[in-house]
Length: 242
Image 1 (cartoon, rainbow, N blue to C red):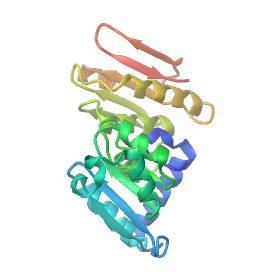
Image 2 (cartoon, one colour):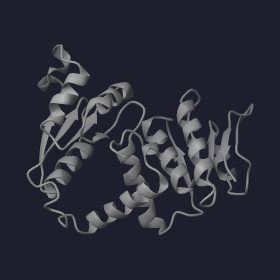
Image 3 (cartoon, rainbow, N blue to C red):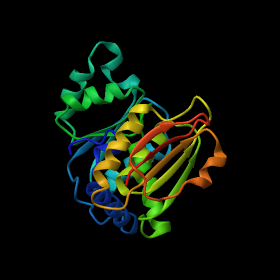
């Protein structure tokens, strides 16, 4: 795995390793202080950021590297150079590239050309680092995620997309309640369905319930269900696996 563009880029094992490593770093933030010694990590933020930007800069510094933060007015992207040209240039100087921007396609184009790892720090469609932080917190509270249920109330946006994919990878039941017209993207739900089907052979199945009716959330249960994606007149969508 070279890049992290969406949570579904992980498999269940690699996500668990990242969660365990994150917990270790939280306990001992300076434990790998020479890992990026002499290296530079470029952080490109095309959107405002407080927590994500500062946490990435701090993480790179704690690993012994030098974070270089740039914005859209500091690169040639808006003045004629292509995404591919920029990816090649930055790859020749940096050890990794972190990007927060709008279009997922732009990040995919950059990663396809770059020879260094590319990490999505938020796009319109995905926020994988947020999902890792959320899942890490849940593990700290729960101890183990098996057999647990999670409710998400809000827009079916990038945060919801990444959390849905993460729950599918770890076998966590998740119920998502969104306002009408703000449901999760169909491609994300389809991908989560595929993940759930693959993971179900190795651990207990997860259930995804999406509804525009918040009263439907308590009805989520983990009984064995055939894999199904359906819609009803109440606006509910259910994705489950045995």
